[in-house]
Length: 242
Ligand SMILES: Nc1ncnc2c1ncn2[C@@H]1O[C@H](COP(=O)(O)OP(=O)(O)OP(=O)(O)O)[C@@H](O)[C@H]1O
Ligand SMILES: [Mg+2]
Image 1 (spheres, helix red, strand yellow):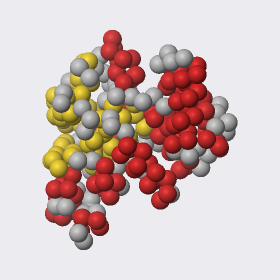
Image 2 (cartoon, protein in one colour):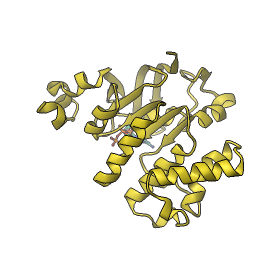
Image 3 (cartoon, helix red, strand yellow):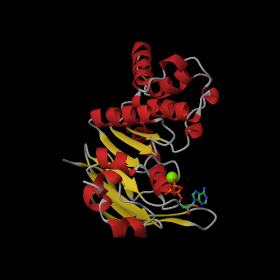
Image 4 (cartoon, protein in one colour):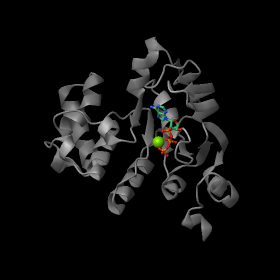
């Protein structure tokens, strides 16, 4: 399997001087689902926002063979979709339908296909009935589901999800897990929902203080009580009592 993401020595300092990422190195194989875990402020979101060049165009990143630079960034964004941690950063149209249709429309797809993909994505997250609603009038969990649909409709090669299950009720969290499980694409999922990470991701990267503390098999990392406690995490119950 080829590497679809290659990162060699990524550093990032915010303008206020916070060094959020320190010498990150990572290779992600096509089709793998990678969990990204670590305490608040570890750098997970900062890292994910580098993957499609939102925070900076950093040439230490290569996505699908394309180096992160101005001339490639639009192609990268068509093939790597991000669900933001805060759905208010994702939803900006007058209606939920328009937000979900935005990606496929920008990809230049025919009108019929845009409509079909949009309705399919809305139905996957059970948001069809909100199609004509303003995104601003949704509950937080509904916004989160709409934000997830914005990348389902794009069907990107790589899906990057920042806390996708946060604020979802148990039924819709379960639905999300089953949707993600059924999609055979490369995914990076940042979350504090370690049970979800355990269910979905074969491999996990543990970040703390902007550095990769360790990476490897999800079950090995999540079952390591000392490692979990040192990093403000907790062994998920499923692993603790199995
Ligand atoms: N826009 C910003 N300007 C300055 N510092 C920032 C900015 N955004 C984040 N930081 C800092 O960068 C570090 C990493 O933050 P980041 O949001 O990437 O963490 P995270 O791992 O996603 O945390 P969480 O689990 O809370 O989502 C933190 O110390 C944070 O305070
Ligand atoms: Mg975050």
